[in-house]
Image 1 (tube, rainbow, N blue to C red):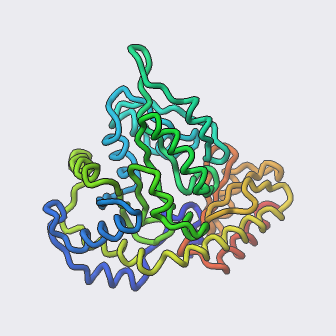
Image 2: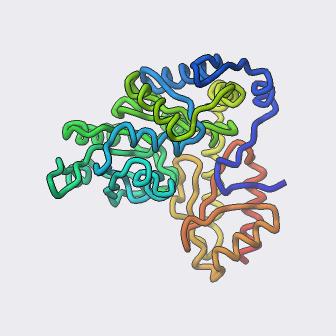
Length: 342
């Protein structure tokens, strides 16, 4: 069986989760009559400390709808240069919302209040007004980086004083919660909107849940329909999310431990440089330039031995631990990597 370290989106429903899916009570989600969807939305709203929440097919849709609600065409938004909303959503902010993205050069995805202040502009006849700040917790392409609560509060406070809305991309928010011991609602409190993904480390097959004020979610629901995200008997997939939140949160700590072992083992291979040698969560970035082997060749070699990792650029390689990767799988992956890089 493939040891898939390409992404934590590779997780598959467990047998118990499949039973929850099969037994889910369902109704018409568009009419607000699906009890399982409603339960999931209520759970996430309470978890994130928001008035209401909305179940959506994907995390990208969560981000894109949030940007659409918070901005008008011609506005500018602020995000880190490695942000998912900028680099991995197919130009969605421009396509859906007609906004510019001001990029900050953060440290592994985390920027400072001073950087936010320098990027602010009220706008004029010639300059787009800056209206939204986006942060990502944890920060994927920074290496699963954890935003400290004080720093998150500080950057959001600068934005809020200037009249900006604030949005938290919480694709791996619960990884941050488990790693830091800080409650999800604390991380979300400085932000007007936030969401969490169900289909990454939590192990559900599909979906994300966007949360905010009741008025924000009312408007978000409209864009859910416009963007084609409305569903019918969606309880069969919402049930997986409910199960994940009830059973798969604390175990994220195992993924973090496996990532630390993976980083240490990769770092011991001659010619390999680990970008984040002490992973805060479940993502490891590394460079094999010192081995003289091309990244594409390495990825092809290890796949023939039943291990998959990913390339995030011409030199950066990424490995992500998750529900379907055990301690033995990590050791096997390291053995294969050593042999293929020898």
